[in-house]
Structures are given as C-alpha cells and as structure tokens.
Length: 425
Image (cartoon, rainbow, N blue to C red):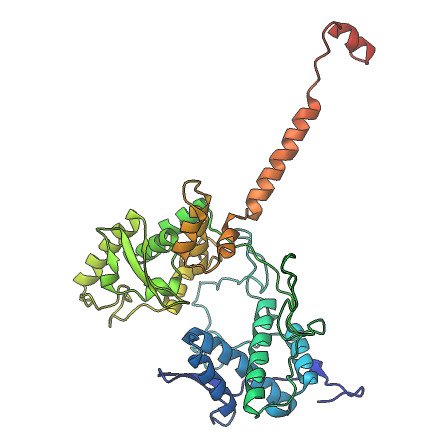
C-alpha cells in the first residue's frame, strides 16, 4: 500500500492475525512460530535456538516469539520478505506501533465475537473505558495503543534478531533497526573517561523513550479490605505469602509441598533469572493460612506428598494452580472494591514494607527480592504520589501557620504602643 508521496499509507494498513506462536511443550523447542500457511518460520526457529543456547529462560523465548509474530504479520501486510527489509520498513513499523490501535480479540468462549446477553433482570456491569486511571489505585488501565515499554521491547527483539542473521548471512546486510545516529561505536559509552560518570546513551534509532515508573504498593487499608473479601483459605495463604516474602507470583506457584518449612518459617522458591533455589522467610500468618488450606484440600482428596505441587485448583480434577488462574482469582477479588491491582503489586508492597523498616538493611531486602543490582532495590525507597502530596500539604499548612503568628517585640518596647503604631487597636 503506497501513497502518492512514495511512502506507505500506514493509516489504511490492515494487519491481519495470521500465523501463531505455538507452545509445543518440547524442552528442545519450547515455542514455534508458524506463518499464515501453518509452516514453521525457520529464521525464527534458528534465532530462538540461539537464545536457548545463551541460557535464556522459556519466558524470554515466549516474549521474543510474540514480538517476531507481530513483525511477521506486519511484513505480510506490506508484502515484504523478511530478508529484504530495510531501515524504511523498521521506521514504518515503529510509526505503526506508535499510532495504530492494538487488535481486539474476542474471548475464546465467544465464537461469534459477541458476549452472551445478560440474564433477565440483571444488568451487565459497564466496564471502565480503556486507558482510564483507576481512582482507588491511581494506575492506568489497559490502553488501546501499544505502551512505550512494549514498543521498546519489540525494537530490541527485532534488532537482536537481525544482528543474529547478519552473522548467519541469511538476512539483509544492513540491520532494519539500526543504532542511533549518535552512537558511532557499536557499544555504549565508548572511549569513556573513567573520571566521568557514565551517561545514558540511546541505543536504537527507533527505540521509544520509556518513562521511569515508581513501583506501586497497596495501602494497608485497601489490602485489609481485599484480604477480608477472599472466600477460600488457599487464596488467603497465597496473598499472605506474596505480601510477606516478596517472591514473584510464578516463583511461589511453582513450589512443591516439600518447599514449605513451617518450623523454620521458610519457603523455598526457584528464582526467575538465575534458576537458583533460595530459602526466604515469610510471616507466621502465611503458614497458619497454609495449614488451614492444606487440611481443607487434603480432606477433599487432593494429592499429598513431598513431590506434589503446593498449590492446587479448588475443583476436581485437582491440578497445579497456574499463573492465569491465580491472576483471575485476584481480579475477581477486586471487583467489589473497584481496584485494578496486579499480583506483582503484592511483591512491590512487600518490598516497600521491608524497605521502610529502619532496622532492615537494604542489602537484606535486595537478597530477599533476588535483585542483581542494589539500584533496583533502591526504587522501593522512593516515596509514592500519596506520600509526596501529604507531605507537601503539611508543608503549606505549616507555612500558613507561621505567617499568621505575630512576632514578639524586642525587650524594652511596649507591645500596646507597637500595636497602635502599626494599625492595631
């Protein structure tokens, strides 16, 4: 689709949902990208195999595969082979992701694309418009546009993909996603003076600026309301662990029954990045709720043993609780409150609570969270919006009180005479 000026008419470009990323379940090839005809995309398969050899996690392969799937769909829409793409295609793709709307995909339960009608006498709850800010949490909801972080991730993925195929000789001789023009060298801070601090240099020419976000924490009042609205001991145990031990949601969900040690008040988790098994402490309440949940689920016939999963579904047949199921549980628990907290906000809340304790060293918080850099942990010492507003309002109140105070006269002066002199009674 070319307009009169010689460029693509991106406003009329229609990108179809062709191809798919398949979860194979095969450890040798966890994810496979299929084109519109159902054939395996061999360049992507070679790139994902290289990532696996570089000890990247399965989650990384999935995220990179989704970015490449979007790129392959866009190339199909502009009728451009992947190995003939130039910087013009990279520029247009960055413009398209910046302006175009994300595709709206109907739920898998709705075959015709329309939700079923609400029962008689029951009105369906109106949803908040996309992108609106939740008044309780201050967090923006899902937007119709691609977020800057999503666009930055896609740019990094595609630049690495074409860098890999520059070495294989199968791709174009020039990367469609080049470095920024200010980057004369291939690495950041080239010829850096060791006496000067390192400066932030932009990498990709079409990489967007991602705003720095302060981690959001759940206030204690909202967390107590949310916890009181839970119906099952399993959900109470999960939230108690997440908000006390600071583990990631998927790290805790992958635990086995042998990993929980109530006598020592410890639980073992496998870290997301390093894949190391680490013992982390949790609150006593978390183990109390865990025991109540286990007694309840074992009486109903759930598997019991050291090598069985720690968290099960509540319905038969009992299966290991997955992240999407836990996310749905947490979302349903917030419907009455009207909040939009995420499971990762529970980790932020635990980190903020530990970071605000003056007797807990920040290095201990770093070890519990599993951060590789202390600068990442220092983000949790940054005050949030509510704290800054409260302190600023208190500052203005103190300024107002000090302005209304009448200074006492110097020794030797009559206060009544000074009052008459300066217009007082």
